[in-house]
Amino acid sequence: MRKSEAGFTLIELLVSIVILMIVSGSALDGVFRLTKVSRTISNRTEMHSGVRNATELLQQEVGQAGRIALPNLVRTGGAVAAGSATVLVNAVNSAGTVLSAVNGTSGMFVGEKLLVDTGSNEETVVLTGVNSTNKTFAATFMLTHAANVPINVYGGFRQGIIPTTVAHGSTGDTMKMLGDINSDGTLEYVEYTCDTAAGNLYRRTMPFDATSKPSVTADMTLLNNITANPDSTACFTYQQRTNNGEPYVVDVAITLTVQTTDRDPVTGLYQKETKALLNVSPRNVFNVWQLAGLGITNRVQPLPATVTTLIGLP
Image (cartoon, rainbow, N blue to C red; front, side, top):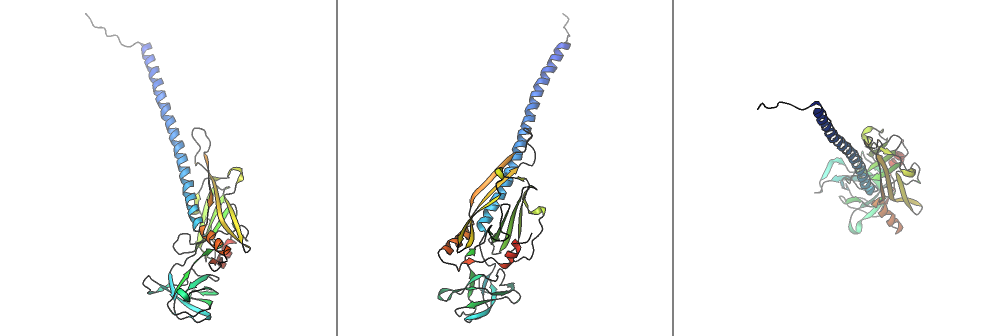
């Protein structure tokens, strides 16, 4: 018998094409949906990562605010008589060898309270002058001291977080702080500025004895997608306590609202998140506030004159 060679009819071909298109369309729609979900997750992940890194840095540096330290081990360069005296300061290594190339007065300032000597002969003196060229400081001593005795600094800055009640102090948009922020013995002045109009959170840092502030540049941006907080809550709020008429910032609340860089591909809107740290304690300021409350004032360090000038600069 002759074999039939009949193929698909036109109708059968059209039906199969329609079915194939429906199946392919469903598969492509699923792929597109997964792509949108992936973009949504990527946007949110980037947003979460940025605000988390910024708040962790803020939390760490607020905790360090008020810490005072000297960048070097230092000792007296000669014997010291009682009364007003000018003292040579030598920087030494851990073995006690003098480092002639290192300035022993680095990190010192007028008004700073230093502990000189050890044991029953130790005393706290207030610096009345610092000469970085000659590597000397001036102070009034009650006791005599031998050469090569240690010089240390203890306590913390009362205004480690610059209070809102002082001239040019911290505000809801700008937090100003001072201290050994990096725990390396170097005193720094740091400003965090929350600029919701431009959408940026800036961190500006400089040596405590700087004579001017660096201009705000793009590399100082910690976050570039912040927006106004709900109910117009300030980025920074401060809990202040007073002792002997002097203000101490003992707690800081940080509230930041950020949004995604791109619009959500599903809703067409920016995704937003508010991150709040309500109890960030500048522990060094808190400690000296407690000491002051107990009448122990020789560990409460004053604000350097250079920082008083810096907080007033734009």
